[in-house]
Image 1 (cartoon, one colour):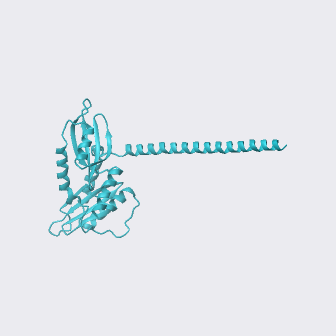
Image 2 (spheres, rainbow, N blue to C red; image 1 turned 120 degrees about the vertical axis):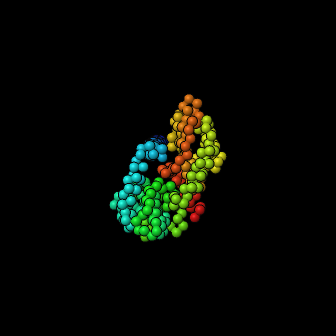
Image 3 (cartoon, rainbow, N blue to C red; image 1 turned 30 degrees about the vertical axis):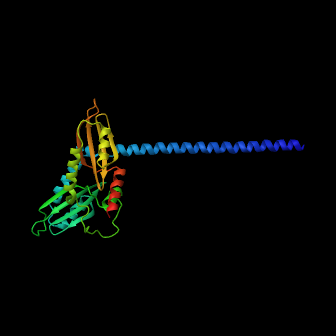
Length: 271
């Protein structure tokens, strides 16, 4: 009888261990399956986000950006004084995210609407309250508050909005040096190279390739960063030879996340 009970106990233990092992295997399999499903979902979301994000070339060709700027510019020109300009911006759905300059002869705002941003540049002559010149430009050097407001439409300034005492984010201040660098870069990129050669060339010039927005047989588009500046390098290729037939270096207003992080790090270092 003792032997019988022992055999029964051994059999029960074996079944218990087998059951636990089977349950563990099932749990592991379910966990692996869940992870795989999550990975697929994340990859799809990333792909959808990339597809939805228009590059600078696509946005320029759509004409939407230019139309918006011109319409806002026209409305602002109807203003009679500084208070009018702020009111016109608000009435048209724009939020003032930063004041880069506020002088007797010049006022400069950064404004945000629908995830996009412009720089409003208003000139005054001879102490007049009505502007002598109003320009709405793409906003390339954005204040921190502008960046936050573009990413979160519920973002609110913690304190009253004040003028940046150093005018650190004024596009008018930096545009000449940016344009000079752009021209030098275009001249440093010869025609008739292959796409991979341009990447090596850019890195050799001290630029980091932070994103590849498009890669087709006849076109490749890089985002590059160096310090606080970023550019979009647009290369049209001969589909037969794979070599460049046209190169444009342009502004990079819609930065990919890695580009955004690279320029943000440079800003933090500068502070």
